[in-house]
Amino acid sequence: MSAGDWGFDTRAIHVGQEPDEATGAITVPIHLATTFVQAAPGQHQGFEYARTSNPTRVALERCVAGLEGAEHGMAFASGMAAEDAVVGMMRPGDHVVLGTDAYGGTFRLIARVYGERGIEWSAVDLADLDALAGAIRPETRQIWVETPTNPMLAVVDIAAVADVAHASGVDVVVDNTFATPYLQNPLELGADLVVHSTTKYLGGHSDVVGGFIAVNRDDLAERLSFVQNAVGAVPSPFDCYLLLRGVKTLGVRMDRHCDNAQAVAKFLAGHPAIDRVLYPGLSDHPGFDIASQQMRRPGGMVSFIHAGGEAAAVATVSATKVFRLAESLGAVESLIEQPSTMTHLSVADSPLAVDPGLVRLSVGIESIEDLLADLEQALGS
Image (cartoon, rainbow, N blue to C red; front, top):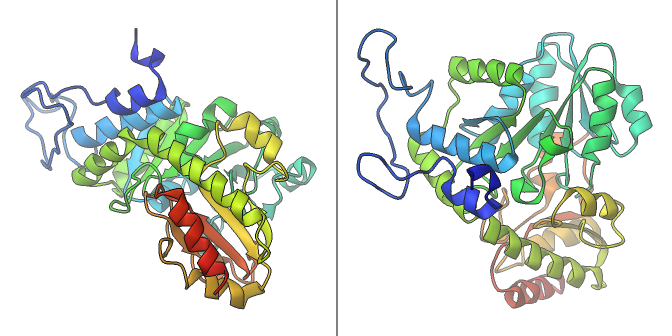
């Protein structure tokens, strides 16, 4: 039985993580060396300089690539460093298409950083395939997809978008941070590149920042590996160790995240203070059918529109006790935020601006009774 035949949890624990040959240690060693001795010029054991490659980082890259079903994987110092490597493959005059509900950091990178360098962009509703096709120009190089989206939890049909994009020779980039490879594998659905903020669910414990790119195409892997080495936005060996430790429990954590999120969404859907609940696991969600087809479960993120608008949303996020008011997501502890003034402040006054009455929850793995009680008291405050 080969590693390719193993189940997800077995791969998460074992791929790239064989016992150390020198000592038999069951966990991957943290290799702190910055340089590696060579027998003769150019004759080495696979490692020359730590910015180029590192044994602990290679273990992480093999593991996460295996979970995404990818031939190649590259670990970065942050999710934004990974995104920068992808966007940086474009040249002045090139064009990129974003969804109208994109992460604020992605928008800031493309519109505010690369926009000043001559990269053009458009925002379209990726659920409208005709609009997507109409937005593609001869100079379009990439289409950026998030699904579920951040923070509106919309669902994008990856395979359908890939069909439209590939008909025009355009690459599809999918941010798989919310879903994780446990719930969704975009490369199998036609995506060309998959990016992650490994800070979130893959790390899972709010103690490490990282990013990842997974690809199957050799040409993309060669270019991205060159950029990774040239720019040097690589994670430390200790960060790679923490991420490997987090990935080992990804499957069991995601099951609890999904269980709790489903219960929270159901509770909110029946609460009089809530105007609308946004969660792909509810049957009235517009993307419910697509999510059921391309995801194994709906995920651990829930958003809602407070019926009382911005002031009520601010009061609610300020009143929780178990849900902590903080940015980021995907860790064992539950977090709550108001995106318009926090994670998505950078899209204010743009086509991607979000409703100030929107509240986003990263539902953790605490006891569900405590999470529901906390939301009940906060919504009544």
